Image 1 (tube, rainbow, N blue to C red):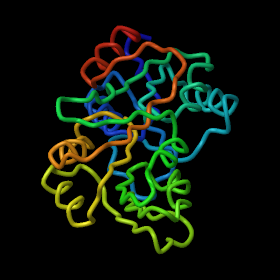
Image 2: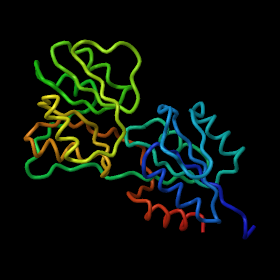
Image 3: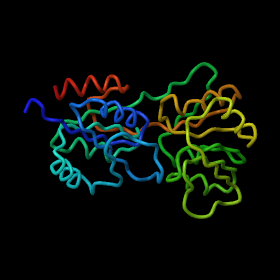
Length: 245
């Protein structure tokens, strides 16, 4: 049908997903449903229909797609959300990926690259005062290191008690470079630990670490299943139009 509204499932959780939903809401040709994993209790406002929680694996995702007449999936999940990206590619509808480029070291940076969270926790030297920005769900290996002091920044508090050798800082990005520098100086941070999530909203901590001459332990992105991938909302809008017509 020439006037049929095409339904798009956005696998969200990133700022790019939120911006894409806003742009699609302004286009009468499309109806977007943004799906969130549900890990954040109070996410930023998102235009259009929003659902929260998992699908129940590939079978559940396929069932949702069939019931909601989804014509296209846009995988705009966090670069470290591997399983949902795998599941999206195993459905019976086209899937496009919107993924911001990873950060690259600049002159003056002192980065050490590690493969995963556990390796990052082990890479911290004894006596370190570390600003750790990996999220509440993966903070445990750092809190288990009683020989370091951890300043763990997250949007929402983690479950369980905070040990004496740790401090939880609750805050939501974006942050300015001056804010990040003040935090590092106030907490006497001597090393930053972060995932290579990319994007401007979270890059100020890298600028602050560079300005202060602090080393950065950078957790590499996991490998994701291959998919047609673009790095900006504008590129994704063009890809959607090309795919759906």
